[in-house]
Image 1: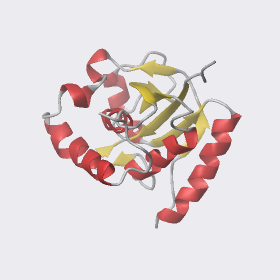
Image 2 (image 1 turned 180 degrees about the vertical axis):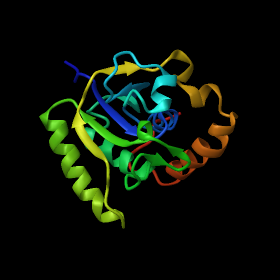
Image 3 (image 1 turned 45 degrees about the vertical axis):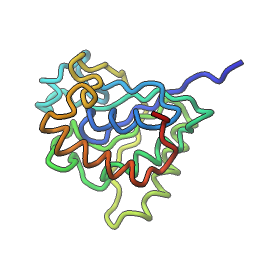
Length: 179
């Protein structure tokens, strides 16, 4: 009998970046861009971008916990973004770009809190990452899914995502997928 897949829903700035990062790791079966944490049902990219909906851009990572644990998912999370900047990652600013871990159960909650406490020692400024129960998740529109793979030469991909991936690949916190 095989172990069931699990999911982790994380916000760490632009969801194109989040999806592109996690697709590189062994054990990740899927990464889906979406929205979570707002008050309005079925938000659109446009409503999220205004900040009026209250949603964060997130990615739902589906993974095999035998190959990659939830704790390792969070090791990647702390490595690839700045969890000390409130509502901002680089030039992307607004509540939709907040650092957030949405947990699905008490085990994920416990692991997230312990992971945040351990990560705090690596940063000079306090971590502002929100850790909250998973609210409804809304998949983003089709044009946002697998964006980096489809548009690697788009300006945002070339100037923002590619350098972050190169840095991540040079010093991955957990094993990478075989290509």
